[in-house]
Image 1 (tube, one colour):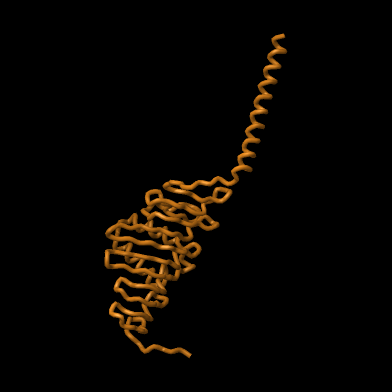
Image 2 (cartoon, rainbow, N blue to C red):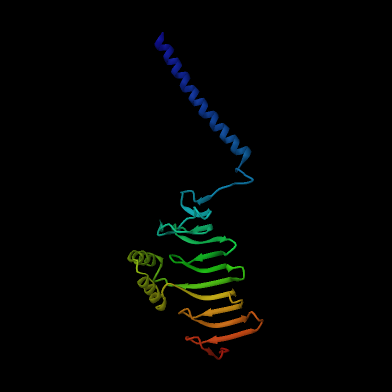
Length: 238
């Protein structure tokens, strides 16, 4: 008698578990059908990670304190101070650009960057204010060398910093720039800190070669320069 009662109780327990699971599934299906995609009017967060269905990071929206340091070859780089904003990541998991901003009474800035694959930014919309009356803003473009991507630069930077030799550090990167490696500015279209508005083009070594615009006194300038910065006649072309 006791064994039969025990079997009945166990059967009731199993039935109760199955019924509970079925009710939960029905409730979830009903809620999904009735409510659809969740909607919120306001969401407060210090950081939001946007990921693919497999968990791969695609975008980070963050305040300054929790901002992502960046990623190369699928690995986060060393922690560093970065402004609040959005950081984008490509299919390989590397950082590929972003929109960041900061500012206070003394200085402020905002940049929208587009990175070359396996390298740093090649195009950027930027605004920079160093004081209430000194500011610049516009479109800037750079050249990045495919044969010298960010990986070797990061490794060289880490090695040189461990030497604690500022002169050696500066000399190394100065030599790279002189040989055409690293980031070389090629174009700026906007307003400079000297209050000149115009187009400024640089050659493959980063030297300004053409200036077209209007200066702070409303004087028009159209100036071609040689590789040493000396004015030369403008070639009208064919």
